[in-house]
Amino acid sequence: MNEALIRMEGIEKHFPGVHALHECSLELAAGEVHALVGENGAGKSTLMKIVTGVYQKDAGRIVVKGREVDIPNTRAAQQLGISMIHQELNLMPDLTVAQNMYIGREPRKGAGLFLDDRKLNQDAERLLREMNLQLDPRTKVSELTVAKQQMVEIAKALSFQSDVLIMDEPTAALTNAEIEELFRIIEELRGRGVGIVYISHRMEELKRITDRITVMRDGRYIDTVKTSDITIDQIISMMVGRELYVVSQEKATPVSDNKVLEVVDLNRGSAVKDVSFHLAKGEILGFAGLMGAGRTEVARAIFGADPIDSGFIRIHGQKVDIRAPHDAVKHGIGYLSEDRKRYGLMVEMDVKTNIAVASYKQARRLFGFMHDVKMAKTAEHFVGALQIKTPSIHQHVKFLSGGNQQKVVISKWLHRDCDILIFDEPTRGIDVGAKTEIYKLLDELAAQGKSIIMISSELPEVLRMSHRIVVMCEGRITGELTRQEATQETIMKFATMRIS
Image (cartoon, rainbow, N blue to C red; front, side, top):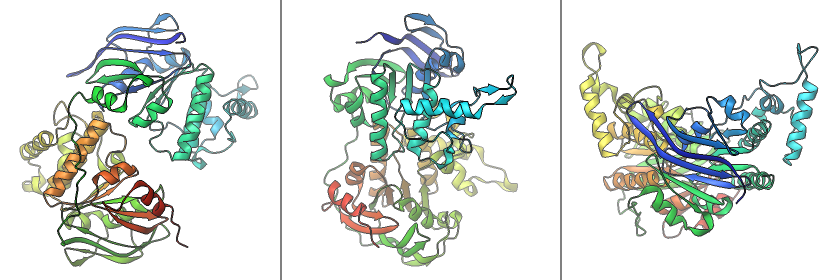
């Protein structure tokens, strides 16, 4: 093993009412890709925010290249050669690649009075060339794909002469081809001696690109192991420390012929073309397809979030007019967006308010005042029923982990008692333990007679959870498969079946 770039020992961190980190440790060597894994809420982000200067440790020591240091802020971390690439990219879309890379550090001329755009672009071009990236530094970031924007973030981090890169869920929004490009960059950085802390919930990635894995659970350090010496099942067992829910492999097609929802000849521009399908009572209907296939657009059209050009919807056999989300809710439809923070939650408000928001009429008293005790009882019920990890129902949702935020959104629609639930990427960005809890919840809802549309880009998830699977390509339904007929190969065949 090469020299240690960073060594964290006995790190402690407290927040009001929460002991976030208990004597946590991490060591990163030069030229190493080191995975940091754990369930949401395990303390991974807190530990990384300490080493990048966002938070300050309460106890313990940090050693960088053999020297014990304090890291009071992010600038101090950058000066030590430590940079973090966040899951939610921090780029300014209306600025160019070069401007984003060197913002706040732009080269100047004329006694420092003017920006030197020529040198700025030359410096950016040289660094991009060293990374073998075919990017024009004068291109606006808004014109780049998510993958290319991520490469800009990496280049920006390296422009600080970073020896340590922390990557938080770097492949969450990337296609397979883009993931391959990212892995190529990681291999190049490894060869140059850069140490990489790689945070991901995708277990198969860890086996492919990491050297060692550090596991955290409930704010505690569990162990560090060589990737080649451990199986994925062993990693998961260390992460969760409990028995996971196992989805039945014998999930049969629902016997119910009761068509709860029928969508007929739905059209919306080029995104949705002649889409027709039905959803039965107690069924989980999976929607599969590649990015841009039109699955989310169909969901938003059903929910009234986007207007339709033609077609109609029947609920319980009756044709309905859904022009806005409140119409859909009135007809018993709940929608969990793939972007829960933007469309599903009020992150600056507490758990209690977020659970009650879709059912305010039930909690309203005379003159518009809210029945706070009733709201609190409801929130406490769902926190217990869905095992939402939160210090209290008064905790702001922004402080919850991704999996627990997702449970809050689900609670909102269960409180509304919706018969039809549309889950768009329900497990995106949440850990394996939280995933299995969501799977268990979906199965329980279906068993209670709820009807579920589940959109997912993870084929194993679609195959595991669905009674039937609808496959889309370029806005059209190209295939419909029973659970027994469906394989990853057949789904991909329909997902790439272009219809002129």
